[in-house]
Image 1 (cartoon, rainbow, N blue to C red):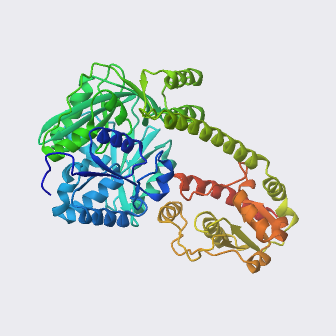
Image 2 (image 1 turned 60 degrees about the horizontal axis):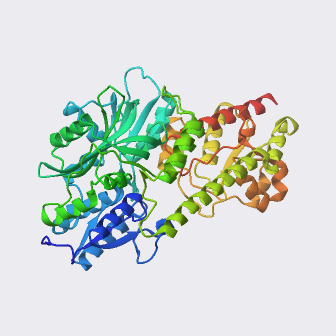
Length: 585
């Protein structure tokens, strides 16, 4: 596509328009008189404040192949459309199109394919930083993408440490890389083994103290066109993460380190180079992001209009955006993330040797940020007072609803009569019923918890034939489903092979044949009561058999990486207790 000399006939397609970086880009480009096609997935449509003239696209994460085809069809249909990808999944999708169809390559406003190698991989970026003599945390390179080899550290480790894994396409879904703090060898092993089937790159790093800082660049053909830096004042979680409250910075050390790295790898495109820094010490490199970041609004408020500069350079090989004076300090906050910051202070139980801000002091600062007009935010839209006010009122309403749900959830867990009944029945049940021959383990889907209990119990029976038989079932109507690969992997790590398991649905015959039903949580108890009320007198909770205060065993499905191993280890404790109860009767 021949580069246009203006912006009147060009349309800019912005995907994932519900994300805050997309909203900032929309405001920037509309202000520059570009024609914008605003698009998002159906599931995220409710997050947009203005739902008029929105184009719906498949979810880039859950429907990756469909999204790729949708972008390709859009470009083939509309010859005057350029695509500005907003997040990692859309960068991946667009990169796959331009790789397979070089004739469409000029239609994407994004870093080069070579640059994305580092922007989409903490593994590759960390190795590049080390090769460029930039300080990084002490790092163990656990596994390279697509490799079967897992390189466990061969020396004693000082926990807590942080496991980081890269973006990867797995089972036709794009899985965004993330991280998890691990406090011991067990948590490390569980997390790595859950990640193993995805074949993503994995690194293990020491945690870095200090605060988050970032150096932001638009770099093309070896030249920096625009640069900016910021310091994070509040992060989510408070120990380190995304910006909730930050300020612009003129830290030459951070800017120099970022530029040096980009020069070393000949980076081309937009880059946010992230570091952590302690006062009086040099910055420590963390990662490179190749897309607009959540706090782009801070850069925009300080005069560094990256969205406009990106589009202008793509069209005309130059930009009218001037480099702002970074010595002029600007502060910015994201109201919703500020509340999440406070929540992380309340709920965090990490073992990090970091001085934790007092909750009272943090609340005062957050309140000041809400009412201080000098603190910029993307939540006040010029000329749209009522919409802005409605957003804040919506935030308050959402927080009140969240507090109510949390209260009711805790109340139900602690006091729900079905849970109390199951706990009471679990006490002494086996001494009163010594003719138990058949156990039925029950969970919702029969793909994670109950099959693990069944197969572990079968192992016990190999050593103790007097133990009763066991089967497992669920309430999900779709049967013959496999245990998800991540849970098969961590179960095998713990000595239980679930490869041959296929889910089964509970039936009256199975319930009648069972001498005892052993459920996992309140939802299972409700389902049993609904379909087989007569079986409630022989229904127990597995988690009520041991000494754990929480009688319910959570469903790991959909939870963060590493949680599966923790749940399976908890189940082992309860199953061992169950075995002892039978052997002692």
